[in-house]
Length: 532
Image (tube, rainbow, N blue to C red; front, side, top):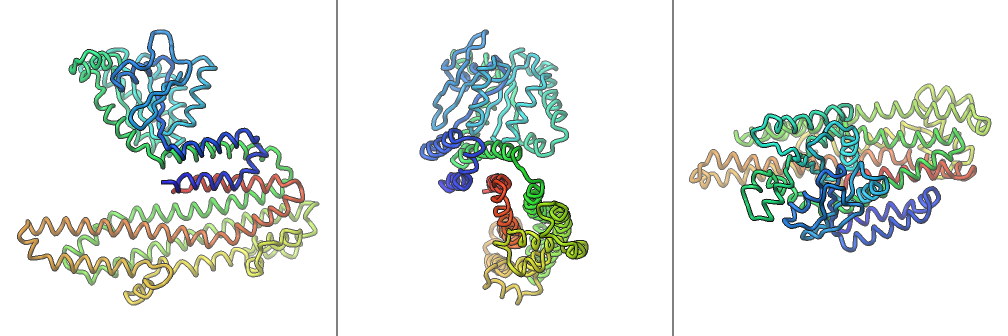
């Protein structure tokens, strides 16, 4: 489990100097200490958060089953109170719309919490914009979230307003996030509950099970139990990564405000574009692969059920070739766009009094013919940013990167027959060969078990086994495919990225180093956003 924390520490250590420069040593030291403490104890923290005086403390008491948190008509919580529930720390906080000094306590603790139970009241706050903005911030942070509407109005199941209340809440949420597809996706995964916290607490304190049932808290209790179970060490590490990303963003904003040279800012932006292009190509290829997955599984299952194992290889080859061609198409598009952007950056340098001598008009024609990177790299080398730029890269520019991609792609995508695939099994990047071996083994195994299957509802048992094994195989095949695709894109774009970053460091050092710091901070942010 410690690899999650190690990844966060590694990013922090790599950019500690830049963070200290732009946000101060106190903030950096505080986060470093928190990382060490939380990785040592690894205790999940779940925060009860939401609208001020919505009944958060009452709900917490109802979930615990006894009166631990102080409640009352006048808002009581002006600090964070900690309650131990099993292995989980549960926090009761002031909430939003509290007095400013109380609200600040809640917001600071929200950053450090691993999961959130957000509470609002049924009497009026469903129309308040700030409620949805706060829910949006939690969704954007990636923290697991449960939403609870405290039924202070006392609605019964039979009341028309009971169902209407929940429907209105969901409708308002979808309208608020209509333009934000990622948040809508997370919203669809977020359950909400309408619970009468007062009734639930009264029922538990008096031992009246009927009151507990009427309060509708039992479904929430099951969801909270799942939330506690799922809030593990990786979730704690994700919280720390989120805190570090916020610090990195703050430092990035400070650095951007201090960046001096427009030319180097444009160079840094180009490096960012390369990283974005790599992510875009991967995402598009993954989307295409995922769309093909259901029919791919169905076709393989059908072939095995019919005993046509000889037809499996052509299906795998067609699948592989389709994705390979699509990968190549997206790579070509990305490369063309990046080269045009590089030509524009080279033009900015060429028109700059500080860099004009290093960028000659003769090279402009090359840039217009698709060699924008060639011109840019040559000019940077002449100016003093030569370190890290290979002769091949300087000569061929984006064509060099494409050659790298094309030389690696066949080992991942191309299949031209069983012998070729079997040979690939012994190479550095095993892919289709082992897949065919496993499929054939599955078929042979199922065939050998045919007699036993006849004694056990043979058709159904055989079909279930085939589906199970094919589903497992396809998932493994896809996981390997995504890993190899990511590696190929990294090997394709890294020579260009590393060369430009090296040039940026050298040239930035000549004018104060802010642009180079900016690149380091953005690289750290990108590392934190990569899936574990």
